[in-house]
Length: 285
Ligand SMILES: [Zn+2]
Ligand SMILES: [Zn+2]
Image (cartoon, rainbow, N blue to C red):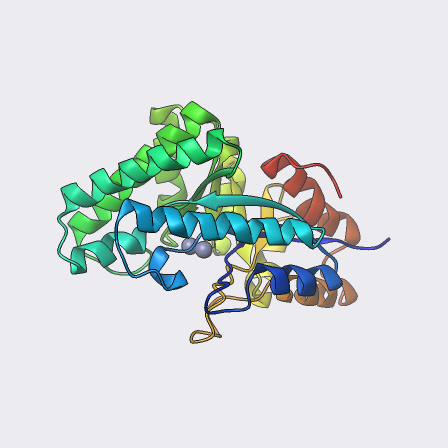
């Protein structure tokens, strides 16, 4: 059986990095069949302005990068959003939190419009800072996340949450948000989780994406997981080469674990193909 691999959360940067065409070709040559592409904030793409229009330019870049993935014969889903680090970025630029929240809400209107045109599939990423920031900025990020969850609910869009790694507390708080807001859990992805979030994500029935790091994968696979997906969270930034992982690390590590007998092919098929088909509503390869 030929094994296939998926990257459930990846970024690309055609301006400063390898770009999606290269990434998709290389991933495909190693058995890759699906990449979920998540937009980067405008300044990552070399767009220096901070207006809604600048964000829309960034969204356009992400959408055209997704097209390149499709042209290489892979399936893809594309998500754009407002990363929690952007809250800090705009505070440093002199905006107050009220303005930033209002700005994010305007962006979500644009995202809804793009979704209705069939250009994007969901919102990502939004959520909470995983590093220390001020409490008011964290609360602002959470309010923005709540708004994104409401939009996901109203327009049946998937949403990728960037969160702290707080185990039970992290997953339970998202459980509460989805319950209070009435968001179907199958739309909500907990991205870049560690073992503890995977453990609780599994119990609470969220999709979650585990970075391609050998230790984390070995531990999480030990859960015999049902709603696990693998991600690179590659940021395609040549100045930060070691950050997170590469999409092709997914097949490399999984093949190694297979050869060591740590996992079997059925589990690999479930995580790399079956779960992607269900979570992203794509046709099987
Ligand atoms: Zn993230
Ligand atoms: Zn990411």
